[in-house]
Length: 399
Image (cartoon, rainbow, N blue to C red):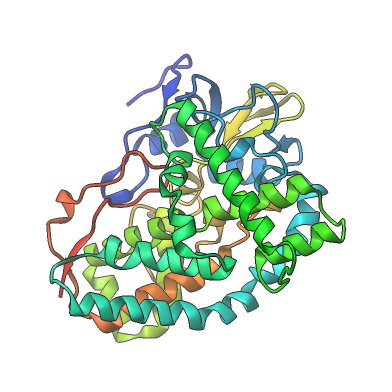
């Protein structure tokens, strides 16, 4: 495909096979690495597809994540990017102040502490799966409930309370929802966050994220908006990204039996498997927008103050200038999956936890079921084309 200088693409772009990025990204990277893209909201943004440009924007203070203003760029409607005070919507120094409160609860040492609980949940779910029907849907039996249990355990909230608004969380990451429904879902999630804060207010536990934020608010270290907005953010982002990475990673391992056999023979390779899954898939094809605070340019394309750019990390991690043969799933790469978590101040807060979660989930599954296979042909797997987080709708497996 050849693009003209006047082409404006329309999101969503056709996805690649088996959860891989849109093939058009490779064309854009070669021919038009800064390309206008019209979102379902009707707004137009600039889509970047080269690693260095994406990293450059993420680390450039002239591009802001503060999207809480009338007319700010939106995928569809007033989603969690519209919530005032949420850590995802803050720029330094406000972002730095809130993040410093949460960092000790999401860093590598914290992930090591949570690993025992993750492993226990994984074993419990796999035991139940082994006792159930064969074949089974691995999403409903394992990857989805594991992410739910881990996230709710981390935040110390009842799983059924979070799941009561499951539809609202789906609206937040839908590519096809009605904008009115998106706005209503945002309000309901905000109300749930307020209820949880109120329940924990009298005796906050600073060893868990929500309690730490409440304690910081009581000490007047953060604002009320920063407390409630960041709790909303933690509720929205704690589950679907892990369901996506775990489910899609398992599909990919089953589609690459030589790589799977390598790690089964040498379990020390599981961390490398996680890094390559993260590089190969990220957990979606797009990113949240950033807005230019002043006139600038990228590769000679003028970006005016107030215009937005999107920086899909999957485009960065498939850039052949940085990853040799990026279309090949190779657990023996020397590069890692760090770039999938972003760069700059908004480098993913939960990166260490995500790595631990995926390592434990993969190793526990294939240790329990070393002969696991897809129960249907990989080409017949139905993929969730409505959600920003890439994953199969169901994942039938047999053992």
